Length: 480
Image 1 (cartoon, rainbow, N blue to C red):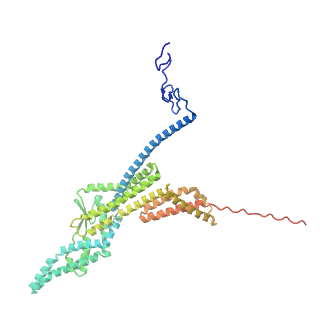
Image 2 (image 1 turned 180 degrees about the vertical axis):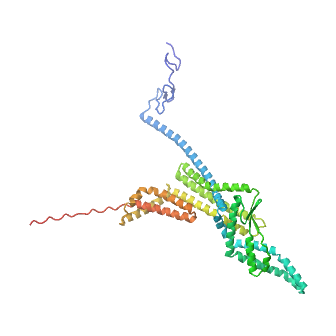
Image 3 (image 1 turned 135 degrees about the vertical axis):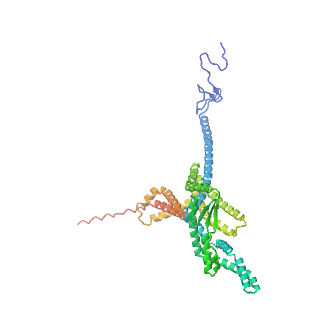
């Protein structure tokens, strides 16, 4: 009898079946997926309970592997959502600045409304009056005129003590000039002239940045300046009318006020054109990226909360940054600046629109986050919704028993109430787009809530069933 080597089969037989610790393998290689292996020889066969337990363990392992993969995908989506929010916030901040600059450069009415309060502020009025007074006194040269008058009087036999009166006389005239100029600057006439000059100057500035020069705005070389000579003529006439005839000797000269200086005006014009395009498209691109971040997030509700908090806190930091930069700039003004208070007021006034827009966006973002939070499963949100639902149920029940004929309104609102919230929010957004402002946001929020409560109340009104009318049968007639 021939002894076969271990693992060898009889002649003509195929390769031996592979075995494992869990039992024989399926012929052809590989264990059948999902099949419960047979125990090795010499071991007791698996009972039905063992097989069920083994299948349960396999399902649990498969579930853990799937959960691990799902957790990795969720983490990846959250990372992508945060990255999109960062990009959207940066573009949003850029769009706020771009829109502000575009409005100040291309919108004359908006620019005039921005700078108009400056002419009516006492601090700025003091600075303007001081500048105009210095210009008048420098042109008149009171010291020289007083000295000539004193010398002429001395030649005519006037006492020598007259020279001691030259200094007080000059000081008195200077005080008179500054007082009259300050009175004029504080009038509504000056404020109207300020508005008119800024309007004309801004219209000319638009022409400059688009390649031309108009009116009092002069573009020469690397400088753009505004002629304030119109103010000088007005002040001169006011002084003559007040009895200071020497002011008539002040020539009508241009008083150039430099508003911008750069050796790269052509490049600036190109940049202004790109600014106009960016201000048109950047806000919509930023909004689209933020909305995309909400949809990329695995949980859209939490994504809305994250987006609202992210944008709101980011814009609050932007506003804080503006305040820090303003204080930094004011603390480092050059000594030639005569009125730092006026400069600070100019910055506050000019940046007023930016602060209002940033505040508006912060409120909108935080309202979105709060709305998403109240729609969630937190204890506070659920308790608040229960209280509101009980109130609406009580109101609907009271209306149901009020006898008011609502007709098909309750049925109609019950059928389409799911669309009430999206429609109300879209209408509020459209109204806010054309009437931006913090007060508008608050009133529109209240309006949307009132609309939702009314719709939900009408949808819950149920007709009260009427009691059936009992008909009493007539008594049979008595026989004749």
